[in-house]
Image 1: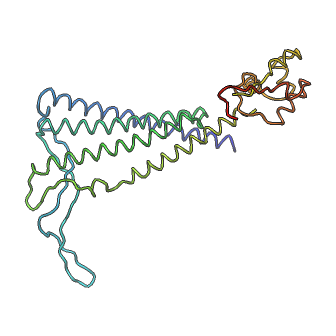
Image 2: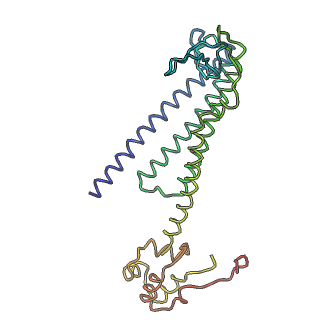
Image 3: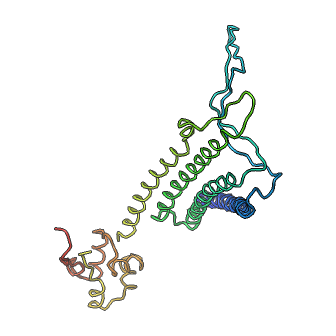
Length: 218
Length: 73
């Protein structure tokens, strides 16, 4: 029974290793593409492929009430879409926008790549039954910090892109605006989760030190 | 660490090898090696008991305190 459990654990670790390695490979590919486009944009001075469109985040509100809310008592109240984050698709992008967007995206991707690499190292240590090490505590800490870094890079990208495009795009009935502070700090679940992971990393470090002491107790 | 383990001295006095001691007391070679090299953080009384019995010595023969200039009181 114990042997079966151990085999299941190893199988799970192997599956996770395959997933993370695949993720790492795909992330490296996407990083290579982004870097290539950014480099070509710098070289050529404009978007290398005019017809190719990119998705950019924008922050907008509707100018007038455009919808109706019908309540249970049949009363009708108007509503309008307000302070919404959306995505637009643009082609013939100026190289400045493409370069900054690409650099910030690449920064987030590099952080993510490092976090995946550290996760693979932790899984490999589990596979070789050497999990409770202070090195893994350091890796957990760095995974948390890198995830927070990736989150901040992505938010910075949103701020830059939406604020850059705010006064350059027009659509009837829609008012494009700069990203407000409350939107920047919305959906910070990832940050809270990774702060929690930092606590886990610290606890893990203390545990690894205690195990080390125990191992060196004859 | 100010505590010095004189296991190699006692082994030489009793003309015993580490392997023989390991077999006598039932402690692994790697653990005894950690003890001998002074890398151990702690020793259990039960372990000390077994080693002293095997080497026919006192705990004081095995353990020595060296008052280093930067050690805390």
